[in-house]
Length: 508
Image 1: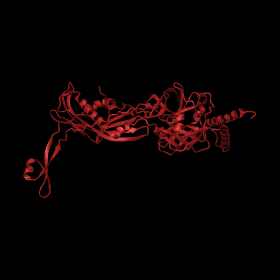
Image 2: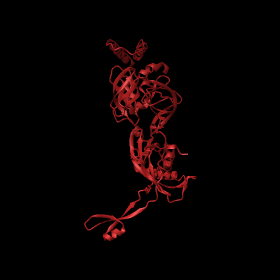
Image 3: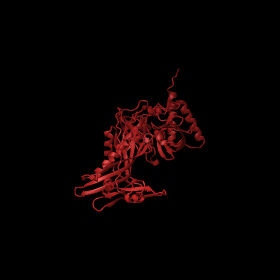
Image 4: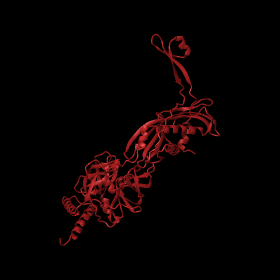
């Protein structure tokens, strides 16, 4: 049984059309004064002038689409996956008026009109048919939601024109003779680069009105036209070039820019994540852009903040919110393909950087995610999961986790059981309605730093602690007050100063 949207499409005769094309011969000629005339053969003979034949097509004729030859893929590398995420019927003018889509041609002719306007069709009905065509020519295709990190390409389809002739022979047996024509506008997007690759049209047709009636003839005629339109899409060289692109590791190389020296924290002052949670929440940031928000984390002692490139987009400045503090920040470095960005807060009063792990994580290890999912009111939410798998997709490494990650978590830090930063969130596999499928992806911290061309070195806790105490005194003297969480963060730096002093050798 086909889904409701496709069922309605056929039932209303979305695909019911007209009788065979009938061409009438009309003659065109000029008289001795150069005036153009049109008429039948007898009138043309009376004029005694040379003429040309003009074929006037029946307005109910089902157009014939040209069948092109698909380009099959024979390479050894895996092609990029094409994911059909949306399939709609969007006939021009259908939102404001009824659109003629064909005719019932048996018995008394009946015109068929589309009166439903814009309709989202069931991609689970058309998807497998499109996927089958792709797979038969060596390409990867599926239906659902594209996985950005896997390099999936997002394909959407809009039926811009449809015309069908139908002749029902047996309602009881659901048999009919049908001819179908469709014109589809395809849009191919690259979610990894957040850009549209191609927008183009293909046509498909099937002509069975003069053949023997078939069971479910209307559906079969539509499917045949859809198959031709899909094969014609695979005959487009630009489209084939886009989906045939193999993994190119050069595209995810370091930025062609000077390296940035960042003093980071490779020394962990915490015993466990639970012990670190309060302080780490303050060192986690909300990245506020004009178009929305994401998450981020302090990784450098001079106010350097790490987040996703797609969080900041094309903007050069943003707001970084930590606790009650709201800082202005600039985008310093960005790698759109690896989806990482480095910000710098413009203030001397910034949180300590989080401790960073050099060891990575193993499959099955516990992970803790901090971020601001969905809404600002959920700031600094902590979720927990495990390392589900490690993936290599389109030349890049990812950590897969089942920890809850939602919109707004992008760019947020992920910690191990010791409270050390091991990754940042980037995205997850979700339904169209936004429901998480517990398959979420993280960018390993070492790769994020590498792809941003960051030259990381260990910060000097002694000088940092002294500076914190000095800044703290200045802030108190100025009457600015001090947030309790901020005091805790500054205190951890002071403790390191004391620890470092206590562990100095008595004799050099």
